[in-house]
Length: 440
Image 1 (tube, helix red, strand yellow):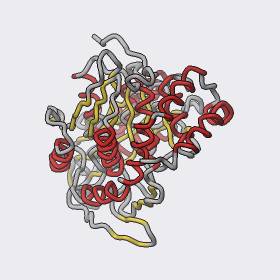
Image 2: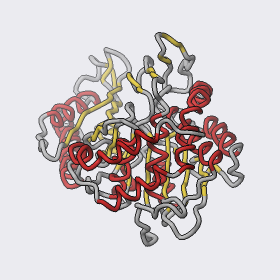
Image 3: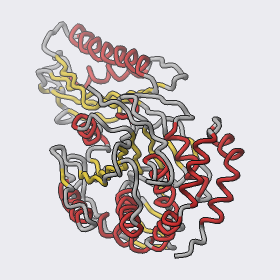
């Protein structure tokens, strides 16, 4: 199949010495440019890029089918089962759902190359009873989760079909993974299990972002706590003088709101949810709040955590002292722990993504640090990036989420090229991704 894309690809490759430096603020080494150019010029790769473009309609149809399968955190099984069937039908007879609920399929390389994970997450933020019906208007698809991350999942399937259609042989192994627990209190449980069970993985790509050019290579760490205040409670008039769980929580929130955090590295906090009490004329016997704190670096995150935990405990002591009581207590539970991490902007995985992004005619968007599945491998020192999907998504995490499929094939094309550059193509180019010694 003749490719109309590759002449422009090769032209863009020739321009990379200028454009990538401006976008990434780091030069691309000549060896990386030469290796990528050899891959982009290969006839089977040209055919694969054509295939991905022609497969766009099929990919969109799968997107519409998968999005209506509910998959809130901890309840991803129905979607995982469906996704496993789709991957098995593409020739992965050993594909499986692991103990944590991830869907895992491995495409072996020719031997002794690096092992690269390419993933998207199965879960969404929406409750199980959410109306997931798709509405179409002005060329856009409206449905909760239509982009995040249903689009990422179907792009993995399209990439697999491109490998099957062209028979490209890679040097390294490719792990295609649908992860669980990326959203909310899922706490990255899927990717944590993946790297716990596989000590020999060398790199990680998560397809999860609203715009194709998006590249995240810095990890925002977060700690999340649930504080449950408990007291004796009682009638607001008859039992006046008893400590109140809600009053104690209010004291804690006031103390937390006065905490100071550094601007650099950016370090943040919020009391995100509160609940409690029985009625307006009752002294609350229980109140619960959930606190989120984040930073790009672990040291300020731990300092902030210390301040918040002290604020909660001091608030309980103050409420008890106010009423001369010892009946109020608080139970503090860690409900989320996402590690922070940094890596060089000129790491090989970044060079591969920048080369591939420019090659399909998209301008890279180097975002600030974010909290994604890539947090875990970055914290382990394993090269990892989270990259945007094809098309465009807006209003993520809301019922009005929508997806614009215009030129959506550019996402899988870019990610396919980046994967090939990282794992290498047999007889064409060596892997850009270094092979690491297995972790203990």
